[in-house]
Each structure stands twice: as structure tokens, then as C-alpha cells.
Length: 430
Image 1: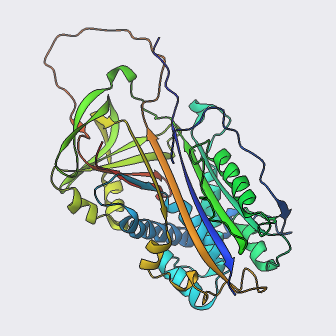
Image 2 (image 1 turned 180 degrees about the vertical axis):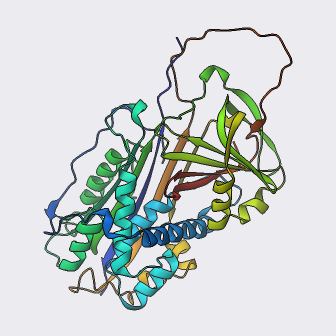
Image 3 (image 1 turned 90 degrees about the horizontal axis):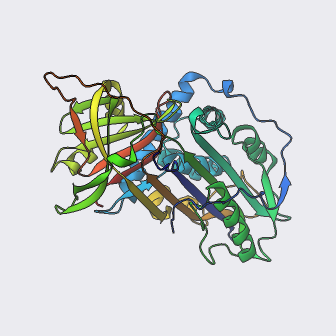
């Protein structure tokens, strides 16, 4: 009997602190989801049906999200290093802020986030995407039934502070979120501890601390958090006994060592100008990892081509075929403040006392003080229990073609049907 290896998971979190103006470790065993802290201030609106967003709006949203993903990738990837982040999580959190943005602030947000739809059409499209992705999850139904994909929005406001009813209505109808109140002003560190504990539970321990010490202050009026957690098993698993140490050509030109997982199966594959691409489906077939492997010496060139059109071209040319696949077992973590990247993308007034967030509250002039993002991805073999029967045939041997991922590569976790990019990153050195 083979030793069983637990399926791995990854989690992403975005948080925004709004002010009144005037470590990343593998999933911890036994981490449980905890109740949402605070007192609920609920809108009377029920969540809208996904059919409120027509197909053309849905397509425009996803195309815009992908364009934003590529733009953010170019801002946050550290030179020469591995990276991972969730453009989907960023879009979810910033989309809630956008519901309360007005004037120049709303115009800048729409341009930077590639929101090409007016507010009254964008939020129904975001709702349709969220509910579509939620339908992919098979949480509590066992690993053979499909993955766990869980996106949760949490909002906490200062107790006694006045929030606009239309803003709360949009959150309830199109973001599946209610606002909860806490006495942030009197105990900012206690609030930080409580929300960090909630985040840790929602991400199965992968993000043990989102808000760093003293990042929440008595001036904080509203906190918005999105957590995105995924746990899936390969549809075509790797066998642990086939994993072995192998050389890996790092982006700087040196050679390191990785634990290379190996299998032979039928994978969607394509070969392009200077690169190969292979898709690895998860159980359930809705979600997959897309791996793009540039030829030796051409990583930067291919990475610069990354775009909506490039990804669509790769997807369109994928054809199933028997392959020998070697993929490193890897783990990547990244945490950053998204303030500077978003400012570089043209989102400026949101972070100043000139911000117009009157749609959130008119009790005080508000601005965004912080945007934290933390992401973790862990990729390894899915353990299995197996028996074998062997038939021996003697003849001419013809091995299937090989894709050996022994050099820097790009990866994306995406929903195959909608082409929505949930997670994006690269692995360039062991």
C-alpha cells in the first residue's frame, strides 16, 4: 500500500483599511472556521440571481479581469523570484470599494481595474461570476467529487458609524456580504486579532496573519476582506514513488535541484513559438492548472507576451494527447502592499484625502489607507492507493512525447468554461 499524501491547498486574501480623513506556512492540521466577529448590520435585500447579468456583460467582466491580472502581475512580481497572487481576490475586494466610489475616484478605479461596465451592470456580473465559481465547489462531498473553492467577503465597520443604505444593498445583492460592526476605535489591536483569526480559519491556516501589528488604528472606519481558498486533487495524479531529485535551470542561469513529479497520461498540450503549454485538470474537470514553459533562454521574452490574447491563443490550441510529464513539486508564497502597484496603474485619488467615497458614507470624508495581499500555493502529488496487473508484450517500443518542466515556467489556476483566471504566478528558481 502506498503512503497517502493529503491534497494541498492554497489561499489568497485581500484587505483594505478605510480611514476617516479629517508568513506563510503549509495548511495547519485541525484549523477550523470561526464565527464572523461583530454585530451584523444587514440590508433587507436578498442576493440577486446570476441571470441578472447577460452573457455579454459576463464576458466583458472576465476579459477585463484578465487584463487587470496581467497588469498587476507586471507590477508585483519581484525580479528574479518566484511569485503568486490572486487577481480574482483583488478584484472582489476592490469591487466592493468601487460600489461606494464616486466622481474622479470611480473613474480612476474603473480604468485601473479594467472595469469596462457601468456600476449598475458591473456588480450583477461580479455576482454571476462569484455564484458560478461557487457552483464548482464540492466541499463536504469528498475529494473524489471535486475541489473545494471558497470565496468569502467580510466587512467590518466602526460601531455607531453611519453607512449609506444603497452601499449596503449592493453588498447584499451582488457581493453576498453583510457589514458587521465592532468598536475599532477603542480596541484596534483586539479587532485586528479577531479578524486575523477569522481569516486564518477561512484559509485553513495558510494565512495565519493578514493585518500586521498596528495596521488598524482608531481612525479606521471600515475593513473589507476577501478570502479565496482552493483545495483540489489532480484528475490524473502523480505517484509518489515516481518523484525523484532532478536538475532545474534557474532564471539567473544557475542550476538547482527540485523534486520532480513524473507521470504518463493524456494531457491537453500545445507547442507555440518559443514555448510549450500543458493543462492539468483537477477532479471535477471545471478547474485546471495551465503551465506555460518557455524554451531555454526565452523566459523573459515569453513572459512579456502574457496578455488576454496570448492566453486565449494558448487555450484554443490545446489538444489532448499522451505525454510523459515531469513537473516540480513546489511551494510559493508572496505578501505585499498593493498601494504602490495600484498607484502605478493610475489609481491615485483613492489613497488621498481627495478620495470620493461618498457612496459608502457621508458622515466623514473617507480614503483607503491600506491594501494587503497574501498568497500561498503548494503543489505536490495526490496520494493514491493502487493495485497493478501486468501484461508483457514484446515488440517495437514507441514512447509518448515528453514535457519536462525543468526550467522557469508560468502557471495559472483557471476556470475552464469561463476562462476566469483565479491565481497567477511563476516558478523561476528552486
